[in-house]
Length: 128
Ligand SMILES: [Zn+2]
Image (cartoon, rainbow, N blue to C red; front, side, top):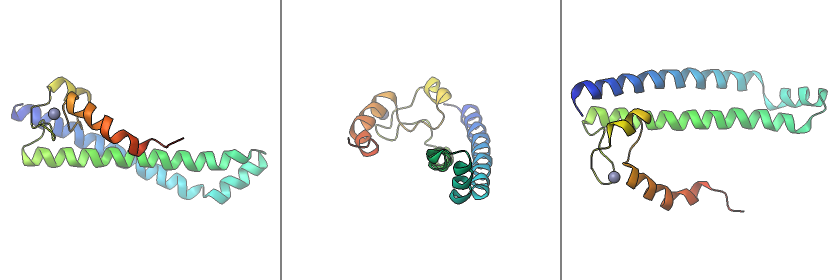
């Protein structure tokens, strides 16, 4: 990858980070406005018990998802600053530009990512 490509990715990542921070702030503001108690009160009015939990859960998982993406963006930006961006963190081979364009926060090449997900996916999947 050349300097110009690296700069393009950096700008894209910075823009996305800005967007996510905005989103997080809005979701947080919404959560403060709608404390579980207030939502529950409204839910009682609408005779829907599951509504309160649903709204709070949605806000939380939205924030978690945004925060996780921000974390990935931060680490991508660190790799850009270190000059290692675009290299797989597992095998150190260059990640194809097409993959990075589709997913600028990609840390691994496709092979290593698949292996990583196979070995780590159990952590996130609740056991039944
Ligand atoms: Zn790899």
